[in-house]
Image (cartoon, rainbow, N blue to C red):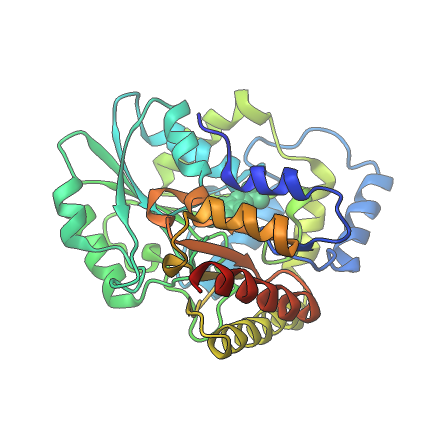
Length: 374
Ligand SMILES: Cc1ncc(COP(=O)(O)O)c(C=O)c1O
């Protein structure tokens, strides 16, 4: 597997206080204190042993309720299986529904771990493009060209990392119809489900009539809990059973105090998430506004916490631009190519940084841009 293109920049910028860090893909907020406290209380009370593989029953029930209320589809708690973060949950879901040699349709650009998982599981990945001209949404006619009789899975990611694009209801319906035509599983990565700025994201599972959607969620971004490692899958009953079985040799169960922290997170008032989303929205508007004033263009994300900035006119590749930006202007960003060849010509700026850093970072980015373009 190729080295991560984000890591290259992170390593070069590591520990440098003079660098503005806009490359990181994790919230800059601390985990809310009542969530930390719940883990502490659980550990002190001796809740430190193994739990059932799929998770403690009260958490699976609370997650089924959350999914109904916030994602708009009904599942039995038995259909909810916890994972060690959304990433491991996606991996387990792929283990449950694929065999080596099966085909999988992945977005490009996308979170690089999807392709890495496909490689680990010996899946044959075909990449569908997410392009500016297509509004960064999956195009069904392209999927029709890529699908083969060996294809088993269509992976969707809305809101998307790195783009922040959100798939609307009509497009989602068309994607489900495509999956039904070719009898595919739909693996829907909704790790940014609650970080949306205009309208709520649409879960394909809410439109699914024939039990082909597996949905993966995470506490990492929603509650600023990246290091706690808590994700979960909602799957059709038979798949959920297979998934829980596949989890056993992988993780035995999830960290026990973390599961009690998750219960406290779910019981939080709506302000906890709303306050973070409101900051990301404000920062998005600041960044898009400043980039526009400086003559640069970026996609206006409807969700997640990234900005996708166009540097195609620089005459340089994304990686070279990102390395030069770090060397000359001391700003670390992720090169678009870290997310696949479709990211060439773009940079991903994380909005998980202070307004002051974002404003200064964008100004320095524009300086680097003018230097190359002029
Ligand atoms: C699109 C996407 N999916 C899944 C994940 C996995 O997150 P975690 O394993 O922390 O839940 C990430 C993390 O960056 C992501 O960006």
